[in-house]
Length: 229
Image (tube, rainbow, N blue to C red; front, side):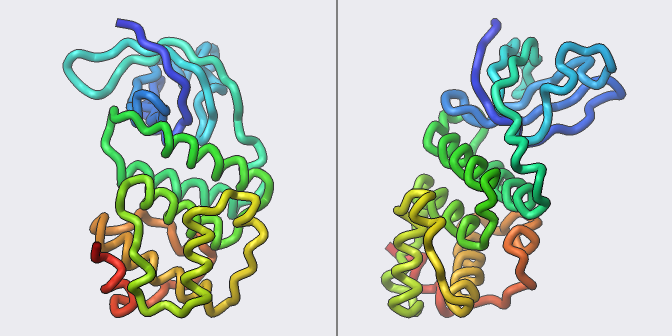
């Protein structure tokens, strides 16, 4: 059975000398994996169409025996070329994509998560590579997954709580105008790290690299009250 979808390439890895496994994020089919047979051959019609964060319309033959389906055709729509102009943009995008992979189920519709990641990629391509961008993505994803921190009950100060509200509910242009203090950033980083660890067991590698920050110490006393109802 041939199906069609629009999706973002979250990750690729070699399967054989000539083929790739491509992980996609789609709005209606969620996360799914396809085998791109022959995609590594120089004359493959798929060559140049399957790279990190490429947006494409694609068709695939669904497998009856596994969650690894066969990719058929790819029509490229957007490469997000702006991400490749700055290493920090790729680092932040890669961490957020890994967070989506870790926190969501395969082949479950994720339209809001898809739109959230698309919004992030567009902002990063415009140069919005600050820690607040990552914090906003983490908070918006947690809210979408029903795991929003109850930061009103935390020990964070009033100004930092207001920053959290804006990061959670504000749009990207508003977030771009935020100017948190260095101390607020240093409070938000460990607070969200502990909250994510509490719910997910661990966070994907690369968070500190994406935030361009050294390893933060645990702040379990701050997050303890925020995990309650």
